[in-house]
Length: 205
Image (tube, rainbow, N blue to C red; front, side, top):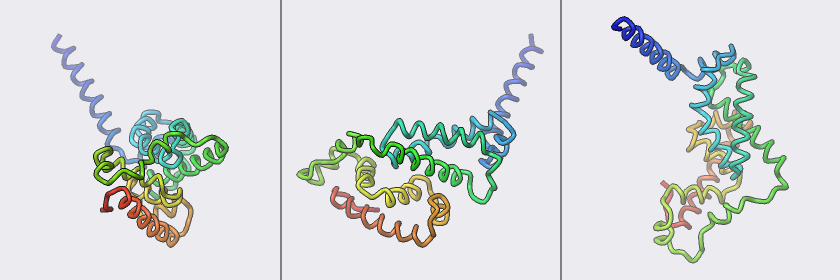
């Protein structure tokens, strides 16, 4: 009985070590393993990034179903094309570039669909004073609402900076535009977001 217990403990520790190693592996190492057909590495990469990718698409599209479809398409591409990653950027940047292209393609396919009624529900009553707005929603909700009033180009760069922590150079790679254009969009996006926040009774940080 003691021998069986010791063997069970050894197996448990080995499993825990394997799980820990998988969790600690870099994204680049995981992607290399995925390229070699490692399904566990694929699952780990998915668990690390699928929520962020889903939220990125959702903020671009305001469509839950589309966001879910794009996430599936992105990771299907990752499984098929992991070997094409050259290591010139972070894996997260590479994933967001794939995601953006797929999201824009999906949006073009659905351009004739009706706008989501949820957007109308997000718009507050202009008669509400700042105190009423702050009582009704927390700051995060107000910021998201203000972001929704920006153009898609401005919303996109702010999303990549504040939600994904991307640098100007990385954003230029993801979107496929010059660094100078990214800086210009950031300037006007921040200015317009500040004005929206002030209208909502908040001051930008």
